[in-house]
Length: 105
Image (tube, rainbow, N blue to C red; front, side, top):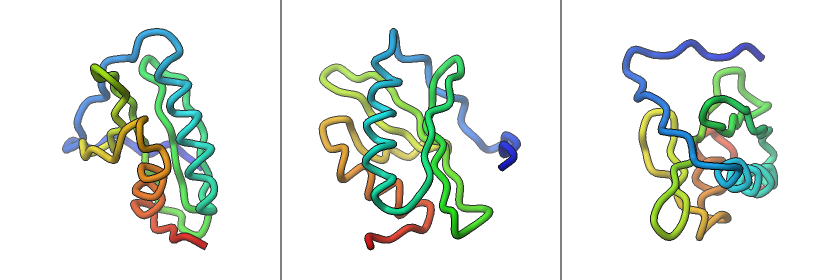
């Protein structure tokens, strides 16, 4: 699957989370979201992010970024919407799955 071009309306990626903390949080979210029948993989970039796609749709793809907060990590959609936190991985996974059109099954 080809990477999506950046939209002029997209918000810039967040600052990288120090160390491997952000990647670890994204990996936990990837594990949780695959229970909804979607594909998820952590992309190692300046700021690692999670690419989630619905295998039932060519266009249902979302990149989820991780931002460090005081007490936890926040998961942010590519368009800037807060999807959840590392304190509520299961709820966040449900939100991400819904975003790409997956339903609990």
